[in-house]
Image (cartoon, rainbow, N blue to C red; front, side, top):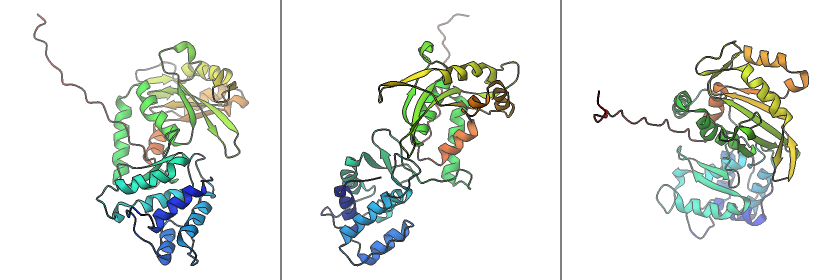
Amino acid sequence: MKWKARTTEQVAELICGDNTDGYFRYLTGPNLTRFFRDVETEFVHDGSTRRLWVADVLQKILDLPSSNPLMPPDAMLRVIRLLMDSEDVFNEKSPRLNALKALNGAIKREGFEAFFADDDQCYLRHSRTGAVGNESTSPHRPLSPVEIEKRNQLISYLDQCSEDDLIEHVLLPLFRQLGFTRITSAGHKDKALEYGKDIWMKFTLPTQHVIYFGIQVKKGKLDSSGVTKGGQANVAEIHNQVLMMLGHEIFDSELSRRVLVGHAFIVAGGEITKAAPNWIGGKLDQSKRSQILFMDREDIVNLFVVSPITPPQVPIQPPFQFDDSIPF
């Protein structure tokens, strides 16, 4: 990822503490070496002009591979987080609103915005897509108390939300965070235009090739039983929808042409039993079988917990009021 020289030099001034506003601490050469060591890099100040040296280091960091093509590398995200550490507040009160304004004044030309999340940490947001930069972390590690609370809150929401709420408040923010773009929800107002999919989106590979995805969403459990029960869906019900999704073209307005969906996500807000993928795999030929991806509640929760996205609030049910005007 390339940033303009003016941008890296402005951010370098903030790191060095050379800015005239005075909301960042002045760092000497040895302190700059310690700063970059704290963000898990090996850069050592060579005694040259601090601002130019830091700007050069920032560009070298930006040249590193990134797990998300929309976001800077993880090392750059750590630089931003350490630079905006709330413990380093200087010449202002916490939260560091003046420091945040100075940082955003530098990076907005690159299409990014810095903000403080609920955990009091500073993150980068991609201005066009809304994706939030977060270091690649495994959801299978021990969770912190904050992450456990976040997980429980999301599970409570999934227990009560509708299918449309699952799409709008959980899946759309999650896929944006994962780097997908042009995310379009078909919704349920016009069934004739769904063609087997609730959402379609695209993902740009580092080689600039584009893969298109369609998503079929079911709120509850997905199994292969012969009878559909309350709160769960039969995999046979979505078999035809998947075939329709993979065979129907979509119009990408950014390219002004029609394209085919390359892969289909089958997403369930509940459990997907082992028998369900086996059943649908037996109904599809080998080429289409490789195009189907499954995501159940556990997958959704794991991805959500390690992201900086705030889980939606469970709606508060209004208390029941007895209407004494109705005669018995």
